[in-house]
Amino acid sequence: MTKDFQYTPANLSNAPGRALDREAARRASASLQSLPKFLPASSVSNLAQEVISRLAARSQACDKPNHQAEQLADALVSRDAAAGLLQVTRMIASGTDVETVYLKYLTGAARILGERWTDDALTSAQVAIAAARIYAIMRGLSSRIEPDVWPDGRHAVFVPVPGEHHTLGVSMAADLFRRDGWLIDLKVGRSHDELLKELAETDYAILALSTSTPAMLPELILLITAVRVTHPHVRILIAGNLVEVEPKLQELTDADFVSNSFEELRTVMNEFHEAVAARAGAALR
Image (cartoon, rainbow, N blue to C red; front, side, top):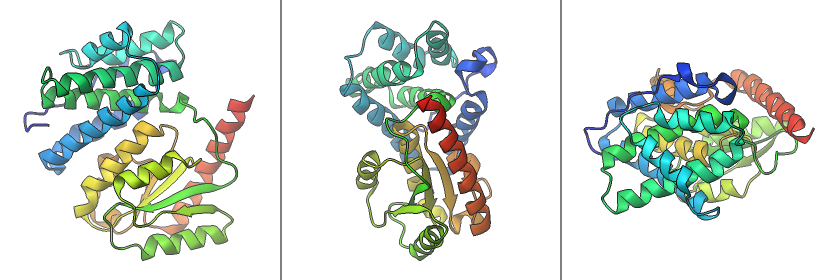
């Protein structure tokens, strides 16, 4: 992505309310709009590549991109910031289920955009804007995207951000939550790709991330972006010393909750578990 990247959030006022979580989409838009002020251009470019490549990989396991995916790809790079969003909400309003929108049309559009980028038919800035629009749409639809399997019991994954050397705190937190009856899967020392591969093989709905310094912010945002794209249903929390030194951390990362207090984290994780259990129960009915 080049330094001329400018992301204009779509106007959500015309989006059908029941098809889209407007607040989630708004938060995602605000987060993406603020990133170029805090991250180097190379890190913002990596985010665009992460969104497009992760979604395109999902497309390869599905049908080949069709005409509607082509139209959506065109809309996502158009001058109209709301064009892609409106196309998706109209699909849903006409009866297309959210899973199909995600697994067929959004992933197909990402694959098409990636191919056009490779062929130099699109600039890095255009792809960056399209990736940002896709991400905001996915965040708006996340409450309606179900995983293949909901986790049993109080299960969460605890992870220090890849590259983070201070892991004692997250290890101690994992032990404390285990004493509270949680099944905690602690993953330490993984690279970004290794971690995502393991997460893809894990049934989880709560992810707690730990990091200590502002230098880890690009890796933190990259990881959250990848998880949002590949596991839209997951609730994400952030803890660690970075919480104390970056007052805009939740805004920048689009995390669901940010705190360095064990008591606050315990309360929120229990609330998240109850919400996940209710949603899983509703999915079974």
